[in-house]
Picture (cartoon, rainbow, N blue to C red):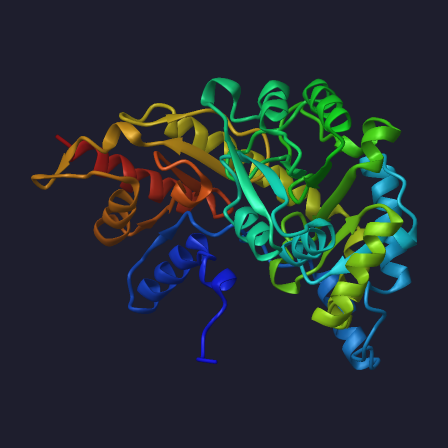
Length: 399
């Protein structure tokens, strides 16, 4: 038998957001002052009380293996948070602590997917969803939404995408990359379809705390017993607590799915990082004032970046309601000329902005929308202002 590599792995695309971030960091290392709108992580440091607990865990020797699905103290804190914030009842035997949100999603689809099962993913989507589904042997079914729909899938589109091969539907609210939030009424209508079609809904609620204005976060699993039984709720500490590098995610699901996920994780990673688990416990049970400060600051940045973007020529944007991204239609730029040459597409646009204007943006082809860019406002107000100034200067150069 000749040496060969995995066909499944070869079909997986590398993360374009991480690639953009890496290129921006490389330019900074060369002395270029790059404004990075790419990274999906807060620019704040992890709160000190969380860091201190992690240090104490190290000094106390809490550096050994833990149970595969996480320590009971952290599971209890997650259960309490599910109950009070999400209005969901998950016992300790329904919770898995994982090494981050991506790991949680990998566990989920490994547990529920058989080869050839279809998973419905509304576009625009977080670029890792289709890749994680494919690695689990599933088939991503992309359903495109429109700006007129606020980039949210309708019950009619969801129902039309379902067939005998459909296993699950991915729901992301607040959404990456659009910043849109599903209302309670919209979720109730989607829940009816999910129950009628008898499929799972994977509810990615990673940005659940990052909501601005009078909107509320609603967990679809809280809308009744029938939808609860079909919901796998996924969240984590990365975004709300500025803990991206700590890699702690968690899920709530049925006992049957949780048992499978725990078994899979035991072979993949043995357990989540022990020290990070102690830090996560402090994050969920300790003071929340720093989290509230971060959310307030993100709200100010959201207002500023939206006010700047909505008046720029050649671009179109709707106001984000949550997360920390602005999703910007730049398709009107593609037919314009820059330095005597037609721009052509979003990748060329992103290259020009990075190389000529020192601004890193994420082209959204890998998010299912090739006419858009994503701008993260998880950077300082000063950096946002400087970056938008540079984009505005570029737009004035177009013919």
